[in-house]
Length: 416
Image 1 (spheres, rainbow, N blue to C red):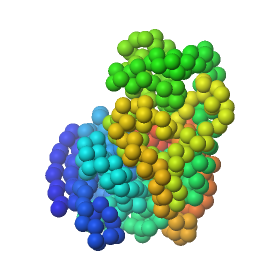
Image 2 (cartoon, rainbow, N blue to C red; image 1 turned 180 degrees about the horizontal axis):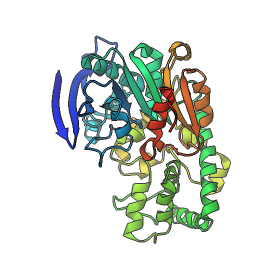
Image 3 (cartoon, rainbow, N blue to C red; image 1 turned 45 degrees about the vertical axis):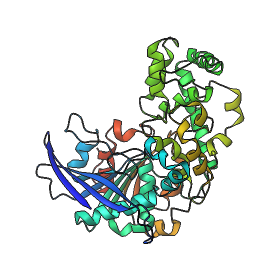
């Protein structure tokens, strides 16, 4: 089944496409299908520009929506100047057949098995179906974070479909273990914590006091979550974004007994209940030929155990399946996925032979995608020009002129 709807909104034309595609690519005996949605966004006069597929971060988040220049993602103007932009809701998210709590009625084993078919390699197959549906011989790809991981998977299997590729915080390792990645991410969060406390030294004792309060069961959110010390410390994930320190500072300046603190704390902690896939599926994004087995929890360094003031980032914990109301229903699914042996998803030889062209923003202080491993992967893509910068954090695409810079690099234009 295919369906198409055309909308016009504040100077943009938005073609909405839904394709019914196999849940399990490459197995003709499995008749299960899902719907996958994408919106093709263009400006007046740009109807014949080349396509740029946007692959969102996550895993487990849908693509942003385009409403016009005042409400669209900050990078969209630069993209639309040279492209029609394809906003793909990756399988399991948004207006594609989305994963949600009601799926659990089918049983945790069935849901866990379903989720094993939502990885980057399957997203690539969906993208190829859309490219063919749109009649494009080749197209360009912009991969933010996990979207960059998916772009690497794309280059590993279908490089001939890609003209230029753009990575923003998304040059993943292709062969390091999840343990290696999360251990290095702890190092990044240690550095981020110390940078924060150099600016606001009075907050170190405040964080320790809040951790003690959480340990005593003294922080209860509006949804009933009794915040554990590990959940509280995960507010450090905000420090991986350009202005995230403001989120942390504003939170720590509030009265812990106030409604404002409790609501803001709930918003500041990562892995909320809106997209359960993000929590249940997260560590799999670093598992190419591995089982994760709660990797981030297992490799926690001794100083993080001893010093409660050190913030954590995208380090999920098994205990949250018992302490976080939104995650409790997903406990058995998360436990099953943690034991799943994920197949390899990248090809070193294929990347070397891909002749990929484009540009990549690699963030020196990236708390989620370590620069050291990004540079290892970049050596396999000599045609992808690098911009290694400390000017932005992991969300640079959304907060600065990152895409403009990458477009200029990729097309050998004078860098703005």
